Image 1 (cartoon, each protein chain N blue to C red):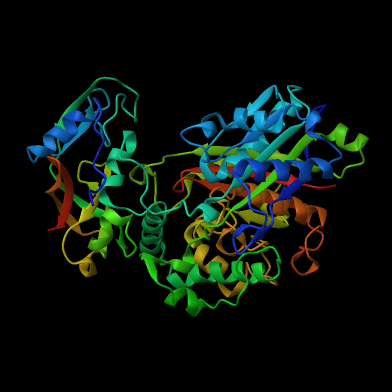
Image 2: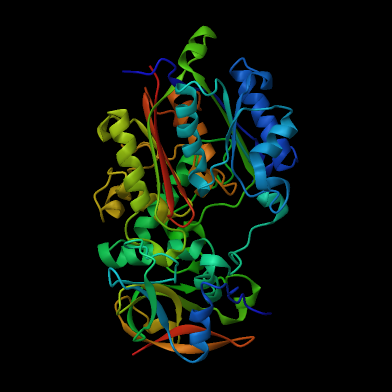
Length: 391
Length: 131
């Protein structure tokens, strides 16, 4: 039985970028305000209607960002009665959609605004040095593992050892992402890319080279959720949240249960599929977190689209590229579209636009009705899956 | 430039102190008899608080590794290429470490033994060498 107040996504927005930087300069708070305004306007709503707020990020820490939902609410001039500050890394926004759905369906709130904003590229705030060697990181940071790429490199090396995966398999993923980005005018990297380009790029952490790694860009987005009845009353086309799940297994890489498989995604997607009651063959479009090429490969296995160890074969021959039979990361992903620190919100934005038929015709998946979105956070640490659909 | 050193806390002090005496310690559970790493207050296997420190053999094998070409910040820049690895100790738990010596001979599955690296300010880090 469907709940009386079924939760739906009614609007999404993202912040325009130019060469990886926000086209209109602004702080993370300004970016979130702009995206909020754009998304709410699309839904025929205003900030006055928002009674639930969700955000995650690493701006303003220590300081105003420590209680990010409270600071953001103050900045926007709202007094929400429901806050989602869950930060499980890049997958945070998939978990926000799930938690917001629970809140709306149980009548705790009516309109939830989910936002993200980052200026990490403009600020040049990223480096590979990792985190202070305190608490659990006493046992990771002192050895000089570049963060986060090193942890993903360790997983890739183990996957290659156990399953015979090759750097060429991983390169297929980067090339496919670039081919999708070429069809997306908003994407940061749109110049041609070949398998050889990826293989010959400067090595960062073996076996991963520079073009196995996501971009470092600014960016932001917003999602508005409310009840299906509200959407109907306002003639909005709802995107249903059919199923969701989340899980975490570790953050320190040494504590990852199995470096050749993505346990968190196995756990979260099993729950999402069970709740949605859909089969893998019914999914029309898939958006997964591609922080690195290996992330995509291991996620496809964990979600059950590829067999365990068969991810390399699965992505080969242009299968996940435009024109292939498995449309994946149709905006170009974190590898070629944008990666503003936490990419998960932009996966949801792309999935919603695909389901509504709102993207450029060249990359629109014909008749897409059901989408799967999967975020990964930390070092293959957390996973959150959402299965979305339209009528 | 000083590399990041462990910021020791009461729960980890015995571990770091033992390394200064060239001993590698694990915490082990007196109820389920499984060791774990890094040291915790509760056993992550059975959640008991009945734990003790035990000395590890220092033997293990390479579970995975990466040869680092772009350093983890300026403090490590003059060491590239260097090998960071996860070693599976013969007692079971895995730990992050460095493999000393020639990066080109490192492979998953090779047997390794602990060595003790002075890291400055009196701190000692466990590294591993191929046997």
